[in-house]
Image (cartoon, rainbow, N blue to C red; front, side, top):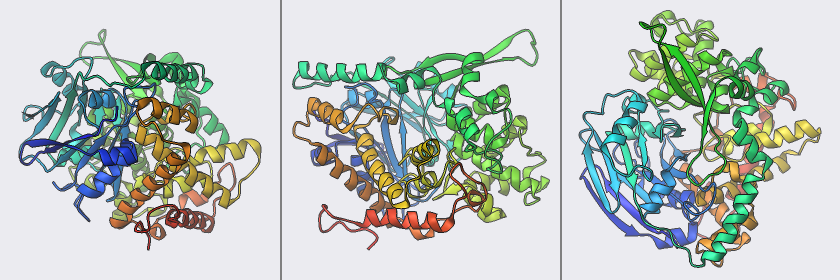
Amino acid sequence: MIIDKVLYIDLSRKSFHVESRSELFEKYLGGTGVAIKLLLEECPVKADPLGPENPIIFAVGPLNGLFPMASKTVVMFKSPLTGNLGESHAGGRTASAIRLVGYGAIIIRGSSETPVYLAIHGEKVYFRDASGLWGVENSYTVGRVLRELEKGAGFRTIMRIGSAGEKMVYYANVVVETYRHFGRLGLGAVFGSKKLKAIVISGKNSIRVKDANHYRQVYDEIFHLAIKSSLMKKYHDIGTSSNILPLNELRALPSLNLRETSLKDAENISGENLAEKYLGRRVACSHCPVACIHLATLREPYEDEPYFYKTTMIPYDYEPLYALGSMLGITDPNGFLRLMDEVEAQGLDAISTGVTLAWATEAYENGIIKDSDTLGIKLRWGDYNSYREAVRKIVYQPNEFYAALAKGVEYAASKYGGLDFALSFGGNEMPGYHTGIAAYLTFLTGSRHSHLDSAGYIIDEKSAATGKKETLQEIVENLFKEESWRQVLSSLVLCFFARGIYTPKIVVKSLNAAGFEHVTEEDLRKIGVEILRNKYLFKTREGFDPNGLRIPRRILEKETPLGVLSEDLIRRGVEEFFNLIKDNKGLKDDFRIFS
């Protein structure tokens, strides 16, 4: 059964209505494909990302609630961090809750004059007063309160912001079910600008299939592929944090703001060490047998009661370990976990926070930043207590310097200097891979400027392992092919960890069982390319220019496992990638971008 209902919510008028948009869901499946078309409709040209005209669009896909690892929700908005396309994915119960309440997408317009949270239960939308929650800085506390106030335990999803969202830090996130996030590109700030503290969604509808026997056969095939996969076992046992040691050995682990590509004592913050000494439990998103979410147990004595301990469960994976660990020179696991806990409680994106603090530390060392700017905080590599204090000041912005840091590393370096070592791409802070040219082409050309776009780091790692280097043309074509296919996966909406399970053949089978009876692999390929081009239609409409992308000099100074990078070669790769975007073969004649 295809769910094609879109719930439109207006925070300014405290009203809502539902429309059927079957033409979008039949053509673009759901998720990313539908969300980008709705964003093109709903977001005015050159809209202020923190203005009431910036919409928030949640979308799910036809496999959510039906198949294993189809556990994600896509959200799109205009990003305050980049001033362009904002897209983030989160798991938890988000996708199941939205499907069980009966919607394929939810659009939130306008802004409230006073703090509010939304409670979406069945066919009703309630606009609850959130004045008592506004100013509660800890996102964990907000979640605990809402669990007591709202019904739907076991079925509902709870999304909320911490103080970072209220204060509109450009990389504030939205916390989901405590340990998952709509992390990158500043959705939390958009919530804050709308005075929207939280959203609770619950429903008890059924998702029906036409042929139950066929559905069960396909489900069993995917389930068994997942539980027998060595890759899925890796995600369950140690998780992505298992990347620390191999990347460190490869000299591809960005450390100390990429002044180094490996870090002494990195094994202390490795996934293996954390699993052995700190792992408290593993949890899973709904409809996932893998349980890749790793929670560390941190025991700390109370200040006034030294024989009594507070126990905190803290999520971790590779990207926070890179950004708040190696990038800041922190190898003390306790120190990393304390810093991570502060970032989580405030509701910040861990990658952007770590990269921004790393730039600030180097700028402080170089004398670009003074004690008067930091308000006396001595920013030193490895000093997690100073970084925890700096995080709180980024959120509350007591002076111009911290207000600049709250707008991201690109803005701060443009204001104070040090752009050569400000590690951002398209305005988004750098992920944790200094593997080679393919990774950096991903950061520059991916629609989200994220390692989760075309996964160029995998191309680099294979080349390093085999000694066989691909040509620039081969790299670009592989990146374009992968990025296009990922638009299909994120329209379904699947966890990218499952991309090896959901091959085109398996995707066609699962879609057939879900009600898309005549879709073919070639159809999917064309859909993926068109969705990708729709994203760049939005981006160019909002001022994105591939020729204007900044390449930080630091990445050209530090050798990768595949050699020193060339700016000319990177720019050629960017040009060739966007030449593929410009090729409209097979699409409608009226579809043109970069004209």
